[in-house]
Length: 286
Image 1 (cartoon, helix red, strand yellow):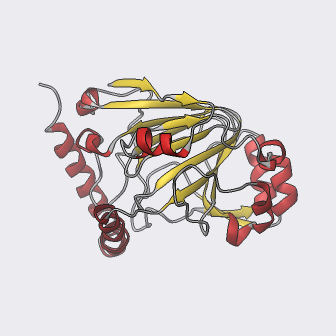
Image 2 (cartoon, helix red, strand yellow):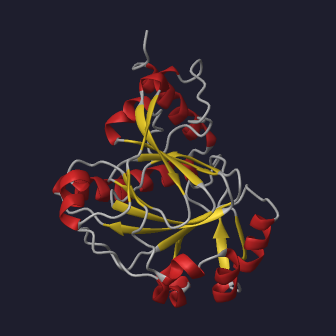
């Protein structure tokens, strides 16, 4: 597997960003993009607990969904303040995923602004993600095919990125948006997953205040080196091919998987796992 570091800049003009990164679908870390936000100074576990600590939040596991459970179903609910205490105590088995600030914590809206970087950001969907130290997020790509700005807060977080044209090596599970759950990109098992040797990707090491641009369709595998959180701002697709991909993913793929899990259960999951192995292994080096 060939991994290169994601390029990092302090600031960048919107025209340069569009020409060199958006149009070429190249990831980029912009280290000063959020520095003027009040959030960069204020946002911490304690501040967020004070702001919406009584909210009941859905929590997700780090293991694959088995049996009849939907792959996007949460596994627990908890007061947000109690969840933060769990993270502080070292819990790395529960993640907070896609928590909509606009709907659930609107007081936070005053702490950031939408950057003028050339992306037409969708202002109805600023979302938060949390994880504890040591949490690993399964290899996946986003269902809506959006341009993403991942704005990071707290301790270090690493994001491995692979362009969508690397999908044949990613052990993509049919009817899902993820690779096989037992793939560890940091310590790949080439005997079990030999196609990973062919993959070419990049690594973004994020610190507090960094903003990572993730192009549409990029696979990402995330490691929380410290308990931390991120906010994602997104620009929904405008290219016809990307719009079609988003609609197909949401209406067809996710619906089909949900129905088959409900009707068939684990045999459906095992069938898809086997197909993921067969398809990617066909591209392994001989």
